Length: 118
Image (cartoon, rainbow, N blue to C red; front, side, top):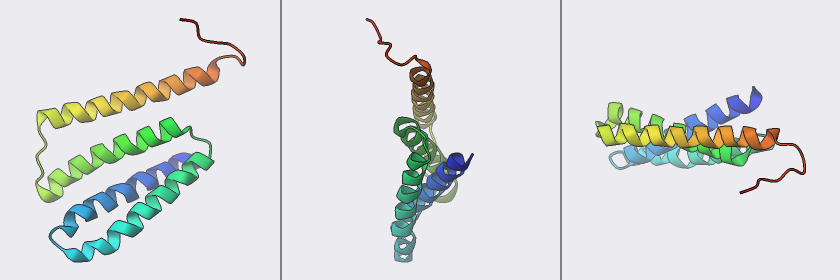
């Protein structure tokens, strides 16, 4: 459970940094949030990896959730477009992360020394 809390915090701080980067365009004071938020996100992501979550899974979830959450919040905060292609793109990202997640579980379940045949 600890690694999932760290991953959630990494996602939230990354989204905060990205939204602050957008806000920085209109209000320079937001730069004070951008750098600490991104730095915190990467440190938290490193802690997630140290806690044992596979890098493909951790990075995939971090990237997909960050992208989806940023798109939704940017629509609400900055009136960015949220069109059908954006929704489909977010769906494809989530589907890709799920495939990576399921694939990593299958690889872990394979007995030691077995090989994949073509």
